Length: 218
Image 1 (cartoon, rainbow, N blue to C red):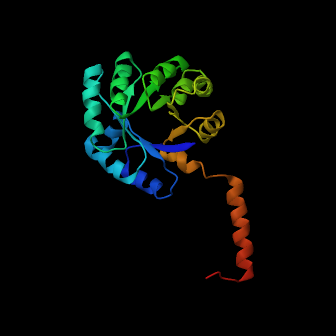
Image 2 (cartoon, rainbow, N blue to C red):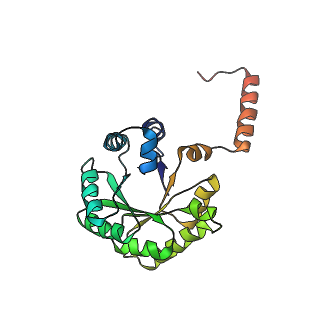
Image 3 (cartoon, rainbow, N blue to C red):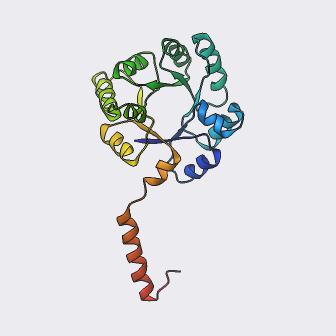
């Protein structure tokens, strides 16, 4: 499973990229707002750091305006993925942009049939939102499983399943078990993935015993 980080914090992206674990980045208007910088500048800098797909979201709601914005965003760098909402206008924009060779991430997906429509429109990625479904008492992970099954039923569909709105380490684990192609994860959750109390306990024991030997490797 590929790891994307869901942030527009360039310093955080740079630090994660240095680990070699980062495959891409997703941003949205809210994350761009938090950065306090012009969107095009942020996306351009991220694209220089991360060679994988970098999602940049349109702000328009009309199909023609989405297409125009998408074309402008795609010119920033070859790894820009234009992000559009899962609306009729968004699907139309997806079809046009993907037909021009631009990667498209269709976002705000909340049902398997929506995911099927996005795939038929040529989406490179579909972004179902797990956490937001959990928030209203539904099972977000079930949606990942349903989309996975639908896509597997039709091998001609090449859209990658990008699990979004992940809130916990367990979400990441369950997405991997369900066969998601990508998980886009907030930085704080990525850092938590490495943590386990038994790892800390074992390391403390090893270091304590090593100190007793009086040896030095260097």
